[in-house]
Length: 138
Image (cartoon, rainbow, N blue to C red; front, side):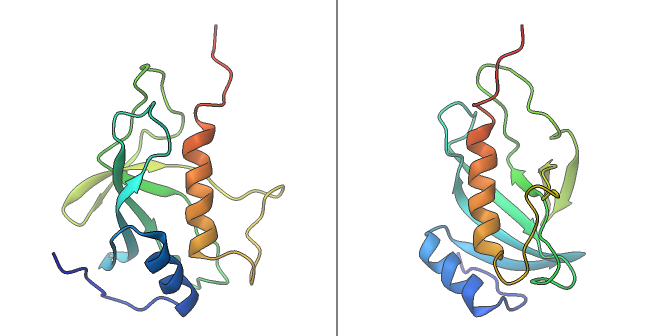
């Protein structure tokens, strides 16, 4: 299947994506999106080993922060524990994606010139792994 390139990314983002190893596309569906196919979920505790990860490219990026990630198919924990802030969905590219509402904060801000699509993808990997570091509830 040919990967769509409906808009251009900065060279450093393209180089990161090519080196990362997942087939990737740029699509415009209301907003510009990067789709990473076969994105590894980082932990055997999820119901899928790999998904499509979607990242909306915000207006003004790379000065404007990227935010959140969207997964198709939706991820769930095999132990049936709920994953917080994942109940919303997003129609995208003819599919329904699960939104993971995760954000940069004052303690962990988006730094212009330092953060980019590659660092955001590494942050997504961290979000996926941290889901299993939380203390279980009684």
